[in-house]
Length: 222
Ligand code: VGL
Ligand code: ZN
Image (cartoon, rainbow, N blue to C red; front, side):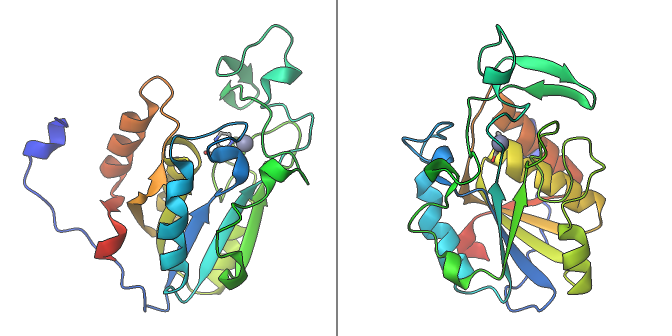
């Protein structure tokens, strides 16, 4: 049982999807994170119908797309003797080394074929600088280099973000952290997410998001 399960339940703030200051963020629903992909997340494709149902109902939907050059520094293949899922030190801190994934222009980098990309209003690509990884939709892993999403959202007076996608414990988690840091109210629909769960990273991410004030809910409550 999670230690917080005992505590008084707090009434979460759940934004109404008709609010014009609310946007949906669909994180990295790409072939490489789905079964059969290079960095497959268990049941990753199960988020597609959830994301589509939300895309159809939100006034503004933003997709992110992990978009790496073939020699990206987050790939274990670029570090001699390093295995995928080991770590290395980068200038900005510890970095997990991943299998090659979401290479620009590859099939693996394409959105899942059933994701309703047509209805989305904005696509944010990230991780395209060779030397730096970018889990978050807002800032790269140095926590400084912006993707431009924060400015876009501010221009449109968006204050609430609802997130779904892959992976719960990496790109969704980092996006949620940065969005909270930037002052957005963040809601994560857990049934619209799946995690990688490397060494307990999923539980840690969920607990930390709760501590930061992220509302964890399910899509049927939105
Ligand atoms: C992701 C690891 C590496 C993600 C992206 O989308 O969560 N994870 N690149
Ligand atoms: Zn990546």
